[in-house]
Length: 533
Image (cartoon, rainbow, N blue to C red; front, top):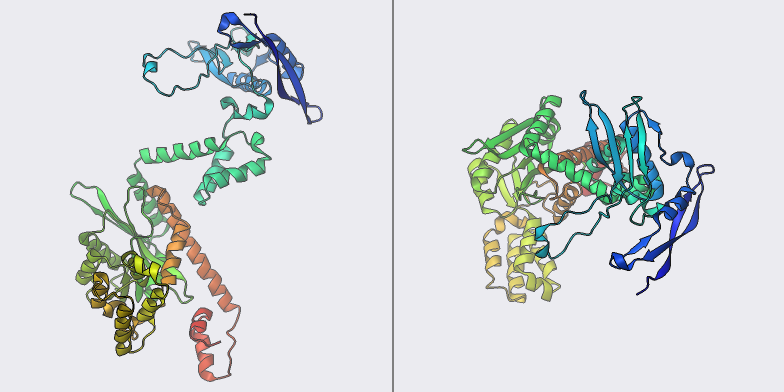
């Protein structure tokens, strides 16, 4: 069988350094199929390289006796040449002198050599792609004679087809992160911006992917390597370092640790000075929850939450817990009170967790414990999912029983009518909820001040705010950092609300003394709630 000759057309971009313009040229490279080489396509490498060399500046092509001050300078020069030709390089053999200085170094094409034979190849289902083609392209330098690194050997021809310049930036030796880029990636990551969006931002700023000098995979690998290094340094130690640093910056910063029998940390609670001040003003009613976000080890984060005079959600403290047992909650509630100089809330809203209820009865018996309405709705949707799907009016009737009735008699009548209307008299979950009606039905708590925290919107807002900053994918150190960002955001929102309050007055419908007094006492948000406008 005679060898077939064919023409392969390959686009190649000419780099014109005089005017900075890039012209698309068509390189026609002649190749042959050699029957003696297992019918693999080969090309005239010398003709190919000569064609490329004719299109790039002469001074960028390595030559024998060319000198460089350092081996790094030689590497960078050869790598820049490789970018124009379209291949990747790596450091190969080198020898050091008695003083430890590298006296010679060989830089080769990344396709140099052959993959070693692996005896396990027979049982491997999916073999890795071949990337070594016994390429002989090299540039060798040594510093024997003048002390400078002189080119003593240069082979330009390749045994494989190189890439076009539009793809050169994808070669491994052409991809690198500078110190400035690493710093920018750290800043973007600490701001909570996703890697995909951060890489897109840097790409646009650089003027395109080819100008960025790294890929999205390099971006993600940098973050992964950095996080892995932090974990190896012991994540618990990192958390302790964070807490101790916060205490140095804020002497009123308070944190407490609980250890197990082996001396390992199980539970952590912390609050800063501003949380303590906020609790002293707005801590009569608090909301406590452990369902915001969990970390990768499924350890719950617990939050003590309140509402300020602008009806904004504020945080009084946070905890990283080992589990959700009564013993853990007993330690946490006792620690929270110690951190708040002995003050206990008048009302606490929680989910319907039995361990939490037990701990509250032991630690805060005088505090009124009421279930969170948002969790009540979540449990109702879970236990009564079929009813919600079949009857559109059920949600409204259920909501009326919670909120609407002023008299106990009206509530009881509406409850029984709802059970009959939807044939739910034998539903065990509703029976259990009815036995606890004094804790969740507002008809039994009209005389209690709940700071607008009984609404489902308030709890959904709290969960949404935290999800915007903290993800279950974050490790513990990263989670602490992003919680601090959440705290700072909430405090800035309060600052803006305080500013607006000082720059405007409430418009009153009537010029009455009691309304003037109310306008001076209440903030704009509270005045709207009281319908002063």
